[in-house]
Image (cartoon, rainbow, N blue to C red; front, side, top):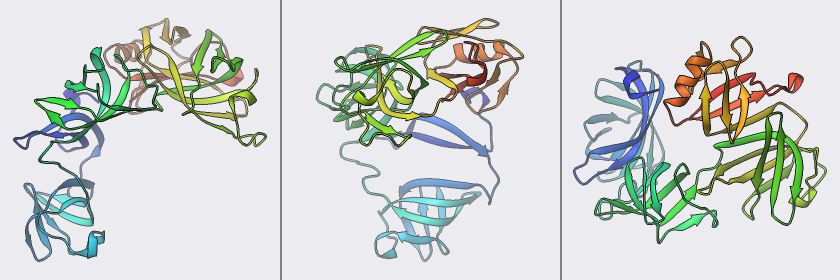
Length: 336
């Protein structure tokens, strides 16, 4: 979805932060479905006001909670000033609530504390970079994992107060799961803490840290360690790219051999030719490769796919089927 394709009656999820004037600055908008008044489920967070009987106001909306589940509210009693999340259906400006839950520290009016997730841009150093256009200073932050290296293109979640329009991060956490690697092990460097995996177009090396979770789904090793991994094993790896361009594994699972999958930022995409991820070139062949956008909507051909890749910051996932492993992508998809 792009801003140009956003339409009236779309159901969307908006994430962001509220400024001193009460204006929500969106950092992420995700389309959910087409809106049907009185039927589509919506969620809204805010502060209760104007409580009267079984209704109250949440901003400009009236909430009727007569039939709502209040088990998530302390004592089952809604009160003015309470920070809540309301789930229900919307008709006009009235929300018929199915559930009301109390939320702690939804807003921090004294410090404007926010949690902001996105891709780092404009990186100068740890005290000077941006996330979704918001200036961030993480010079005093704790990192998760501790060895996280910040840099342009790294996806993180930063949390802290906004002071003089700068988010003074107290915590910065890598948002894992963006990089996906399902492939066969070529070699293991136990001393260096790395695993090299092989694809038809070439190899990818992944770093393993003390924070990496390892599991043997074949049930042979428990616990499963780097020392148990050997050439020829088929691994499913989830992780992220740090500021130095290294792939850091969050999770490693050994499983039976399956399709090769590589997901990450695209170096380039050329219609009728290839898409390059982590330096590996996978062929794109109309009629052989199936193409999808970030909403799993089919794309007509490699030209439409590469146009979408080159005009967005989405990651790309390619799958090379086990039955015909040849370096040509059987599936190529955008991943939000």
